[in-house]
Length: 254
Image 1 (tube, helix red, strand yellow):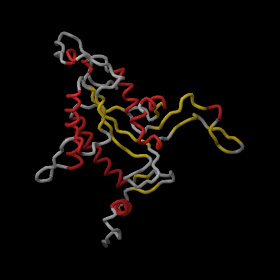
Image 2 (tube, one colour):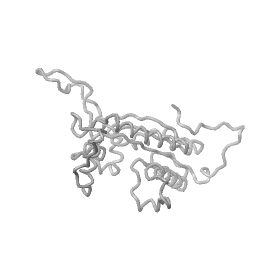
Image 3 (cartoon, helix red, strand yellow):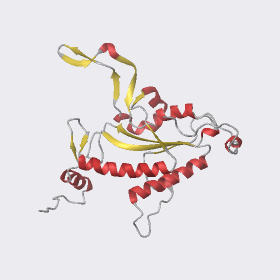
Image 4 (cartoon, rainbow, N blue to C red):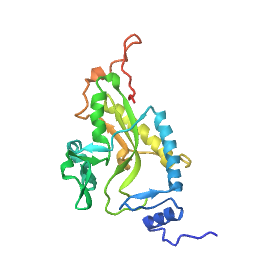
């Protein structure tokens, strides 16, 4: 027996939540603001993830994984970048619990020398690693992708739309110059459009100027980072070495 959702579709958030619940895709969890993704919902995620992952790898990106704990000092270096969600960060301050007066509490003697932020995004720690990996123009371009979970302590949460923890993908690249970085951005926007918007429209949807649309938060370009070595234009434009000359592997070692 079919039944219609008794929700006004003009109120998108309420309608969407009703669809998620009735489709048995997810439900709230004992952890405030976090959800349990049920088999139907996770199956949808797997289908999207597999298709997008295939397309990302086809562009030459390699998958990596970085720690979910980020030193507070790393976050502080990018204070302007993280200002928008600084109040949403979860912070680890102790490394063990202790039974005190019959209650488990953080052990006062186990305080970390430096607090660790539970990953809200990975730019800072990936930037630190890029500074080690990129030592010459031969190491460029460096194209990596990460599938991970992130935590942002949202005050008002809704299933799939806004939760304290959510699954995502983030791409990070390093290039010899800004032109190459922009070309990569347009290429990845096209990949996102293929997956998120589809090409079944007639005529196909077009991506215009990047500043006229909301770029995916996972689209990250490290262009003129102070943490990365800067190469002179003439070196960046040098032809690749001959077959006899050894060259560094441009892929990320695993």
